[in-house]
Image (cartoon, rainbow, N blue to C red; front, side, top):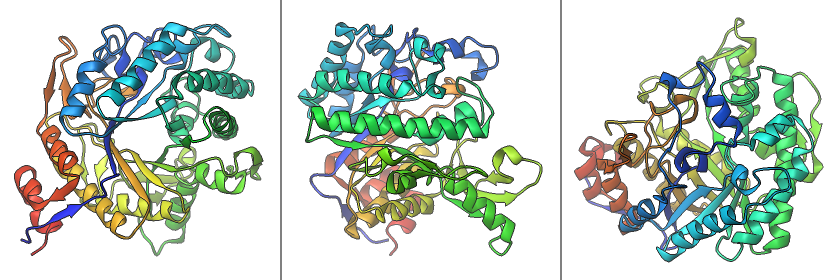
Length: 444
């Protein structure tokens, strides 16, 4: 084994990511709160409830303290639209001030904030008007963004408009496990176009209010390999699924045209060129096999790559080559890259140390190729309400007891702290937290 240290640039941002609905709690004026109440929508009948008590209890302060003590230099959080505009045209100054306190709290602790403006959740009043199937959502979203930007512009330079529009479109309009619970591919493509138009409107509004803003659109990227590379139909489904999921929104921003299923591309010229950085959310990779019995999945049955380590919920699997493939694919767009999410659901912290270390090694490779990768945000700082999986899927560096709200550091919190404090990945850190990886990461 070689003894070595892989250093990152001093300016590289090290942080974690959270989403308002998942950590704030009591977000009662949203479509997702209503969705939780429906039978069978959330695993084990869980509800978000107080979540991590960031809003009413203000426990963001202690969690930000933990992040700062662990050497983090950044944090990604989201603003909840329903709190800012609880009724159409009524703006809540106290809610805006609370978010202002949060981003200033990050700054005071030496953490750079990255603020997401939409993370899967809508005000109830918007959902009642048709949500993202109603084109009027575009000017409504722009008005909301303008209010947030005016309030936070002195403290925030990094913005994300709409988190994972590809996941939001898929879960709400194809898979049907997010509100509105639709299963209609053609409606999904119309929603995709509306999401792009809203992103473009937000992009221009942010730059008008804050010319120095850096604005991105975080995409959930899943490499998809054909199960049998020599079989033309496996190659076709892998390529088609990739194009209509991972590549869909980024290509549309590049070309101003949105691919569709079995229909000509939709023109969205206003979206062209509307990003200053690329936001990468990477969790896992897939293998696709042609299967005529599942047209709703574009005739492709997906599974994890052979030998990949699968997480608690069977939702994600550790596949480090896919992370590098994602970075390589994004590099061709010639924009700065931030890894805006990367993590694994692992309550016992059995898999997380390995999952965390292997992508960081791939990240270091990319940096040493002089690819413009500027930061890494691990998902997540604390356990949170994980959408349709409720509290059954635990992503936190810190465990949260939902009854007492007590936080307990997992071993991986110490591992990540060692990386953040040193701004490096060392053989010493690997030997301490995942010795089985030493020969792989530091071959002798």
